[in-house]
Length: 607
Image (tube, rainbow, N blue to C red):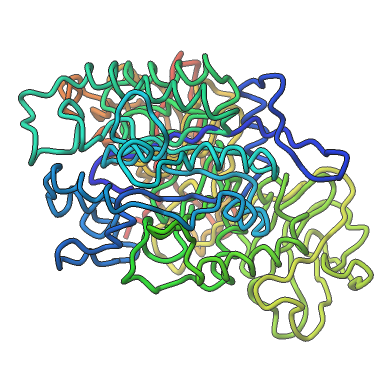
């Protein structure tokens, strides 16, 4: 699924309307179409999904004629991914086509797969309808290179999964490789069978990609989302695809990898880097994608399975920061999910049956940092996920300004805890050992919506103070965001009501140089802003960092540094005493566009 440059995934988030039948089972509504915003709301409530990489590469299992594809864990080079081995080993198309003759997943059972996903606590399923190798895992009328026409199996597994998902209340979604297709001479990716000079990408889009997407959107029920990978270079091409999806199914979401990775988000939500977890919360819809072992597709050499505890904590981590968690499995060529994967998922599902209230439909933690775990909340309940049990049995929670009316174990609501308070510092008296070694959840019932004091960034000795998105407090339209090329940054601020601020505590009186790091487009140059520290105001002007220079973007010529961050000296500030100060950055006046892509601001002591 990985590639060196671009990845775009299309996963339509099914009309997630779960309704109860007469027997009490959840079923996905196939009735009135839903809007994109309704689709997003259901995506936000779902939190946990199953990703499935399944195709001809599953037959190979990580080996081609004695050559093995290694599993390199977090080093996601193209050569370490089994689903990309046609490209990494330059397997000729004629030889790779022969693999289809061996693909006969006679043990595939759609109901069993969906049932496992449901027992695991997953709410949506995303499966590879077509990966980069160009082979369709559905009965496409556009190309005979598909599982019905080119294999002895002669069945459409996507149709069967769509029906099973509808029956069992799981949102059905698909992955579609819209840019790379090693079977099509006009697509990207296959340079060993086809010469780039003969490529006509517009022809590929018109004659294969768009028609196959139309097949998926019109023949497989309501899709929750389409997951695109390896983003297209031009925004016009991405818009074509987004418009097609939303015109046919407004409630079907499009992920952010549909467009150029260096450009602004074109889809409805963002996907983090493969195997990535955010350092802190984001303020836009996003999804974390992880694997159960080190591989996306089936790899017979990869037995590095994540323990249930790791999966549970990654899920909690993603949800506590405002995102969803999409966990991948790689079925075998026979159509079975490896037993170790199934065993892990069953244990995660058992945890969720007890603790699901603290996951589904919750919001991100109001605390920016917690030393002992994570937090989610819903209504007037805070769910404290305790990863590191306090040795003295006293859990400390700083910054909560609300009255706490009750504290108890989620798995045993009759087990309440003694509370003591000193200002906004709350102490919760817990038992001597955790109730759940993976993640014990304590519920705090509070009065009103959570109100939390901002964190204070402490200077260590006389070292520089570096402030970034993790500890920032945003107001107005300024939000914390992610881009696969730009990484984590803050943007969307346009006037003085939009700001970023921090509380800092310096260890001694000092004079500091102030440096700011950001990226800016050409038209943003000249925008005025100010840095406020204590009673000092430092005026500054945005400089064009060539974040999107014209020469970077030509047809088939992506810019290598579209988020070009640079560091600028803002000025010098005197902090006349040790203690706490507030630092704020904001536009001086309305600029009519984004001020900058903010990365960090640093206070460096003058020696």
